[in-house]
Length: 303
Image (cartoon, rainbow, N blue to C red):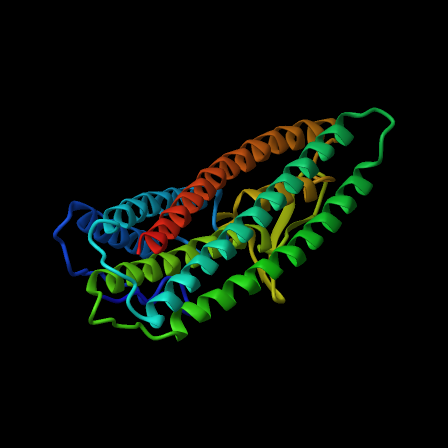
């Protein structure tokens, strides 16, 4: 059984062949793991879109549903947690689940802040006698920079977890084959979780998409990343919803003020709906994680 998305999410995925197919839940978890791996092979991890993120989180939720069924089934198949090594692994899996829940919680806070920022921007644009559009855009730039800085901390934490998962060798307990296999499956699922959560966090750390007007009605869009400037015809196909909002706001000066406000308000409303969609998936994902953690605790208590 192998799974190695370390370094780059697009490389290293292999089909998972799991032993012990005596129960349908064993077969389902194998199929779910292979499906997630196949999806990650084809998904775009560069400037991921909200659609890609929601699809990834949905696939991950299905995986955790299968994992939860597997653990519940294991209550009747597993004898005792017979070694200190097994206890060590179950403790580590429980700690991992807490770390994942912490990252989901902090990401939910980021989503809330981002939605509030979009809502405040819309209010400022509608308000007569309010702040100038230039100051509104400056405030947005400051928020985006702070957002990227804050989210990068979560990315760093996730990378540490990723390294822990892959640097620790698989253990084997000849006295408890089924529990050994269940723990290995947990590690496979944890590996998939780190990849998809990193995909989610990448949504918020994508570089700011800027436009530089050449006249009142035309602009040369540039995508700036690590000193590189990508022409508009190449950049447009590689932007997510957050960068589309960037481009709309930075497009001020390429159209009349009233036209700009109407376009920006529409884009902000669409962006709020996007944030709500991602947030609803994360709430469901958190519930799956809590349920799986509870099942793992029951497995430990049962033994």
